[in-house]
Image (cartoon, rainbow, N blue to C red; front, side, top):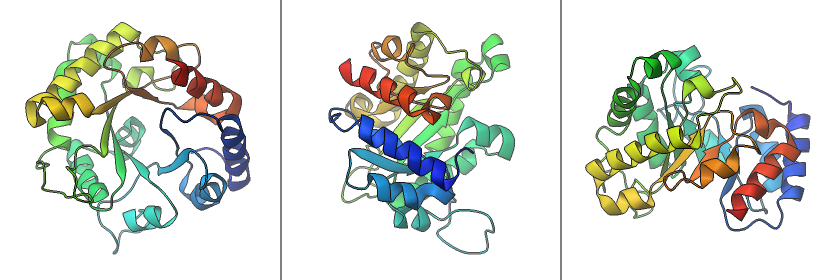
Length: 250
């Protein structure tokens, strides 16, 4: 919940200018809802994609204050974040709600970034893998290959998982590359068990949690970390540009 329309447009303009020559990786930015269309106007012919921070599981109706997938597609969004830890923490979102939102996002052709991760208490109590497995299983419940057709494709390629340890979000603490890789490898195995080796190999798993220009290189050198979900560091154009350029060089 940052940036007025003017501030968001200014930030997007700087990011666009700074990343003009980057074409080997996928880049997406996720402004607040009020700034989505103005930012789309800035980046629509660039190498940067637009995403929304959330959506509702129905396309329309008496859901005051919620955002329809139709609306975010209409303003140019290609991506959507589902189940971010802050929405789980502050808004009471459950894995079951994430599942409903994910199915809706797929129906509308949105590339979904599904967030999962543990609290510091869960990690200290040895519950990390139990929690991650439960969130994965519930979020993907009922999603079988071919059941939610997306332009004739399997529904799973337009899904990305973001592992975001809650204890490392907005705290300045980042999971070491080794810790992050262990969980990413576990998640990839969950995908393989449920959907097969080929899907697991192609499946993108991001790391999110106080990512910055100092930590990006070590994280992306790990074999199962395919990218990052950047938080606070994305609010500064220079910082975000540096992160993307370092990612592109690996």
